[in-house]
Amino acid sequence: RTLREQFIDGLTAALGDGVRFFIPPEHVDCIINFSIPGLKSEVCLNYLSSKDICVSSSSACSVRAKKNTVLPAYGLDEAYVNSAVRIGISHFNTTEEIDILISELKNAAAFAVRKR
Image 1: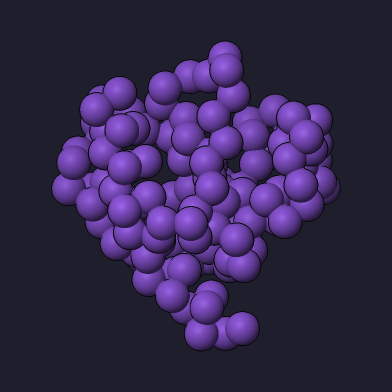
Image 2: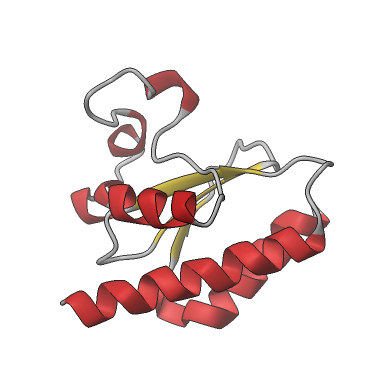
């Protein structure tokens, strides 16, 4: 929970209204779904992958699906779904790794703004 809160608080501080989180009422603390509007999931995933950071753009139950069906089922709009990223945090992760992830997401968001 500490790393989850660090991530949510840190990314919110870094991006303000430039980040949206989807936290369903029934959730697992180690999984976080968020969206950076204007930064497509695929672009974000490729950027983070180039920094050796592994994340996903879909839920575990829709990995093989061509389209994410879980997030729309919760009523999330297409813009959110197209930029949704899912991360998992474990007890093996460190506060330093969370800080790096936040920093790289800030860089990715800045890149997306420059490309518009």
